Amino acid sequence: MSIGLVFGYMGLIGTIFLGPFVLFQALHSETVAAHLSWKVVGFLALEGIFNNVVSDWLWAKSVVLTSATVATVGLSLTMPLAFFSDWLFWKSVPSYQSLLGAGSVILGFFLVSYANRRG
Image (cartoon, rainbow, N blue to C red):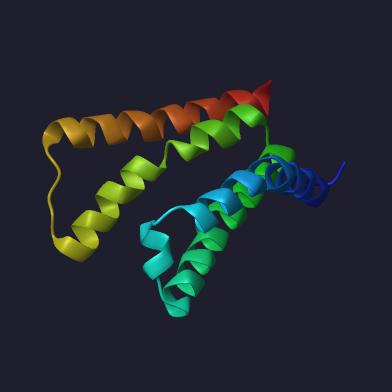
């Protein structure tokens, strides 16, 4: 089964079962969303596509190319990368506990990747 088909069915099921609730909420409630401009709605949709759809598709593709364990442990690399990007862009130096934790996560990723290769 293809990844696109799986995500397509997930979207279809979500739309069928959650769509009526969203439509009801949009029509019968005075929410913040009623005051958004179309430009803001467009940016929210674009952010949702890149932040959710693309990242989930890439994760599913990595599961196919490696294994579920390596792909899931690879998600934990977001924290060390966040520390690095904070240091790079904001000159925010993490504490030694944060660096120790980030180093442990990176070491764990390499150990899982190595064990997955051998086994």
